[in-house]
Image (cartoon, rainbow, N blue to C red; front, side, top):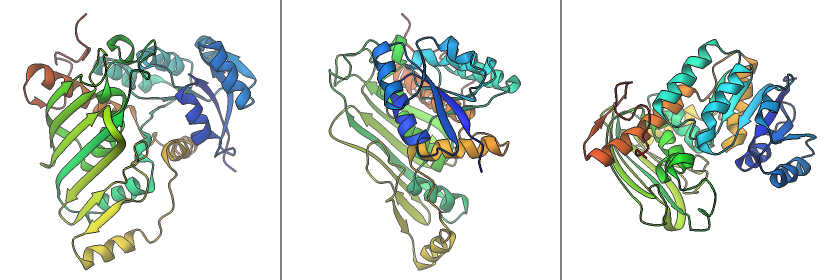
Length: 357
């Protein structure tokens, strides 16, 4: 019988999805015992919906609860950094929504804090958790796919003025970025999960859809460390919402499903070069067991890691890689130059990619 981890949710917006998808399906592993939100009405609604007795508008009260194993941070992006450090200092395990923090300097400080913390941190990158993406990962890691050639990564979503009628969305100070940061970051992580690290980025960003401070259209060319080429684009002005990956390898081409918010899910098209490759894939996947979709799969994998003393299935270094891509995007768009990765502490945007006030 697995041990049950107690969870406190801070932020009852996306936090509700974490409860429904990530915790309720695993009652033998998780119990959500406390919720926190600055909006008393939303706090009461979520606490009542899930019969959670402990409810507070003060995150410090959550940190002081001795019987909480995991603090799950689902607040607006600019608040993540202090909450992560407070939770680690309180000895909690931490789950945090994207973007993890607002700069490479902050993520490096988080990584340093983890080294001496009793708890561990898992950033949310739920697009990895779907049978399609994980089958592709197994095929690639087994060497069957061969050399990566080229990929296309698309985030074609729609957001209107109503979406941005909100105190924190669409603003550099609170959202930390636009479509690149808060929408496409998940599928960009999935692309590097399958294609490996990025070596160079050339990018353009624009604000064309809504009257906001941050960008809502981006396009970029990536050179991967493997030598493969990737084209990445995103907009919040698409009249049909889809997310799509198409990755061409030497022996296999992969294409994700087009579901906007779950592109890692089956069905994926897995197109082998020939019958021998097809047979090798069939043999490799003969014992496949479903991994769980989105938050379901990621939270289950986190519990298994905690129970076995293993690193989280998604780490703060994974988040750093995603934030490096973001930083390089903004640097390239501003400078008009090709930007080499990785980015060190002497990079001009290491402390912030946001425009100067």
